[in-house]
Length: 413
Ligand code: PHE
Image 1 (cartoon, rainbow, N blue to C red):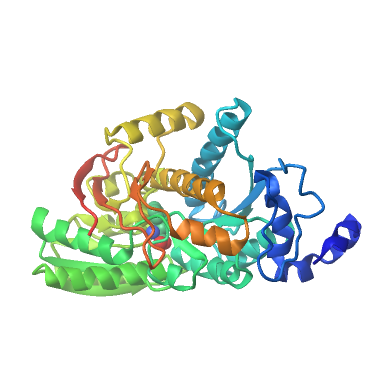
Image 2 (image 1 turned 90 degrees about the vertical axis):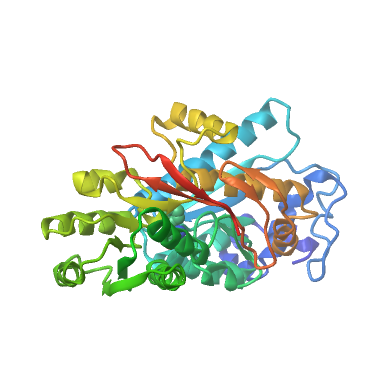
């Protein structure tokens, strides 16, 4: 696109949306000249800043969020969205108050209903229709993998707040995360089982339809053996088949000291409730996928006293956590779960990069995100490494009647 692009009517532009999306950098560049000096015109996008060069662009910067706002993991998307929106509110209020000189942020959220295909569509929409400069999401690793392919293809940076499967950031140089990975999480739960609970023979029951669940089961198994433990039995279930009676019978027969269940909260809570009915009384252990208030709502007494690894505990007394919990509670009436905290951190980290980046082209923005070091988040300090991942500590929390006391923290490797 060149200068004449400015004269094309909005209607015609709309018609060209799909074609333009391929050279999306061009359109995005128009929004970025606020800092004065205009576009430095990186290769291929000739002088788009020219026409408006002397007029500072104060229009909001558009970012996108793709999320499971509905479906069986709905609290993942909802909590993350609330965390992101709190970060945006604070930034935009600081601009209004004159304490921050920057452009406001405008968020568009697309619901993917927890389905991989819809995650891809959501990201396509955000990029080609809404023309966002960056994307936040997803929570579930399988959905980040689907959406991430699209973001990478269009060259639009994406930060997953909470996807822990290694494959997510392996998609390419546009994809980042601000949380720990499942290899570390698996080690943490295995160590906790063997060293703290003295549970050596652990059964594994995982969802073979979720990359997150399968990956975490594998990492846990390796770590359990390395810690001197033993797999009592390994059983798989299907995302879409709620009947796990046969698998639970096998678990019962194996007489484990504990059961590791790396699924998402709705299914995990239902499975634990069913397990108790089948006479399984040993402790259940999980990963971050259990983190939802619904876990206890669904599981009731059956899930009390279980443990899972997580990114943070709202009960922790560090100033950053206390301050965030207070602000979030005042707004939403409930304590923020890890999704909300990670959404808040991912958004703030993105804003810091937006403010520092020489332009809002995907390439410049990705390079600026990649250079993030020692960013002070609610969930800990975030440094983006060469794999576009973050190395963070993990905490084992206990499910305890609406509370999530932190039982043991494991430092980042
Ligand atoms: N780590 C999970 C995944 O990759 C998502 C998740 C993160 C769920 C944090 C709950 C809390 O699929």
